[in-house]
Image 1 (cartoon, rainbow over the protein chains, first blue to last red):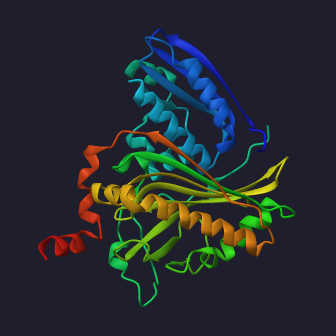
Image 2: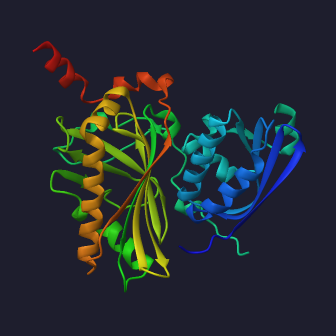
Length: 116
Length: 227
């Protein structure tokens, strides 16, 4: 498989919240990177995982599929999954694919943290 | 990192399928105006099914260009795909007639995404599945170029879920294995098709039980029960 062109890191702005900062291209080839980031974020007591898309360059339908499988993992653990930093274009894609009905969409980190 | 613009690769925003000209022998009532359904709008367990075949000596771009241009050619003879008049392009709708199960099926798919090395469909209400079907090709160091179909799907309602358990899952596997086998033959490869099936979510989404009202097989089921 081709190398993924994505980097992710995990932060803890609150005890109960983890943020996964996503930079680069989210495609099916990023599966290992996203799985590792989610496993890093999935600590005892974490109730919400937020995906920060401010540095997302590109996403294809394989990337949308990865978000669905991450959503299922989070739901299995009783966690909510949220997203912020999406451009208008990607907000439309979340709406088109109806991911926005299952993943909370926020304007920025402050509003996401205020709700979680 | 170079920024890639993908606006033109995605379907324009829409919630319902809108079809233009359609074949005279196709019942558009089961497609026109139907709402799109992602995996979270379906009912059954969530599956990720991946079918792959090696096609050496072809680039991913060549494989996808052929696949798009000749899409229906690779399907089994008991199913028919009516490609959009303008080709497999984002936002277009493909129509499907199938006689795989006990009841003939007429449905459609939205071309959700398309670029030089992949394209994806999203299904509507009344389709057996809720989710995405992605066709892609990529370079693999060991095998050369790989052509792949990946489904991320739940059945859309309890009736389809029962059918999937009884016979549908095997039929689905056979259909995509046939498709990849035909594509590989057409492009000069005799490599075997590899199938990988992962159950992503065991839970059934009972809140979506009422999707059954869109199931085209309901009249047939009522008829069988009353006879």
